[in-house]
Length: 335
Image 1 (tube, one colour):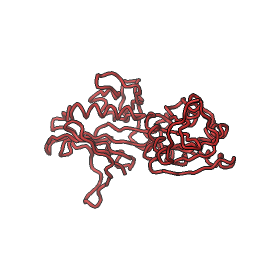
Image 2 (cartoon, rainbow, N blue to C red; image 1 turned 30 degrees about the vertical axis):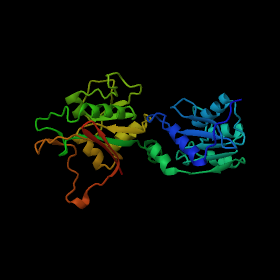
Image 3 (cartoon, one colour; image 1 turned 120 degrees about the vertical axis):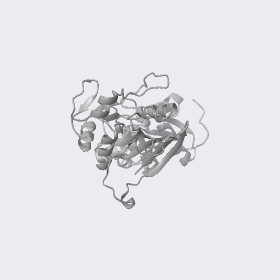
Image 4 (cartoon, helix red, strand yellow; image 1 turned 180 degrees about the vertical axis):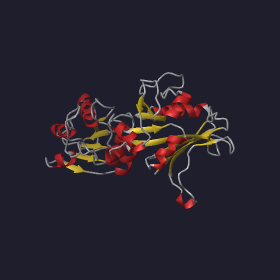
C-alpha cells in the first residue's frame, strides 16, 4: 500500500480540484470538473479530472486513482468543483459512485445548473453523507463561464473577436486588413479558436476572404480540436464543409447552433455580423486585439451604428484580462 501524502487543508484541497479541472478541454458539451479525495487524516487518497465527453467524470477518475494508489476512500472527503451528477448519461451517476465507494463527506463548489444532472448533493445527503454545497460558486462559474451560460439560458455563449488599430479601425481606406496585428497575436487568436465549439462569419466575409476558420499551431499544423465552421447569411456558398445558416437573425443562429450541442460561439465576421449580434444584446464577451497603429478616418470601423447618440447611452463592459502579446495588446471584456 502506498504511503499517504502530506495532509491537505480543506481550502487547499478545493484549490487543487480547481487546478485539475483547468486541465480539461474548454470546448465541448460538458463542463470542466476536478475532484480531490482526502482521507480522515488529511492525506491525499485520489484525484482526477474530466477530460471531455465520453471520458470518466472527475469523481470516478479520482476513485480510480485511489484504487491505483492502493488507498481506500471509505470515510474520506471528496472535494469537487461541481455538484456530482445524478443521472445516467454516457457514464453512470457520480453520486452513486461516491456512495458505493463509502465517501463520508462531499464538498462541492457549485450546484449543477443543469436540471437533467443536478441532485447529486441531496441524493448523497439522504443517504447519510455529509454534504457542503456552493463552497466557491464564483470561481466555479468563472471556470465554466460559457457552459454555465449555455445551460442556464439555453443558448450558446458568444465571444466577439475584434482586431483593430489604436483608432478603432479594422481595415484601411482601400479595404486592406492583413495584417493589422502581429504574428504573435495571430498565433494567440488561433489558440482561442481551439477553445470554442463554433466559429461564425457572414457570407460577405466568406465570399470576400474565403477564410479557412481552422485552429492552427504556430507551424501551420491543425490543432487537435477543430470548431464547427459556420457561415451566416442568405447568399449561396459552394462549401459543403461549412455549416450554412440562411438567416440574418442572431437569435436564430444561436438556436440552430444549440441544436448542434454548441456551447461557445466565436464571432469572427466583419462589422455587419458583429453589429447585428451587439444590437441584439447577444454578445457576452469581447476579445479585442489592439495594434499600435493608426489608420485614420478613412478606415473601416469594427462596429456599425448602434443608435447611440450620447455617452450616457454607451454599452459598457468590464475588463477581465489584459495581456501584452508581442507589440499588440489583448483585452478580454465581459458584461
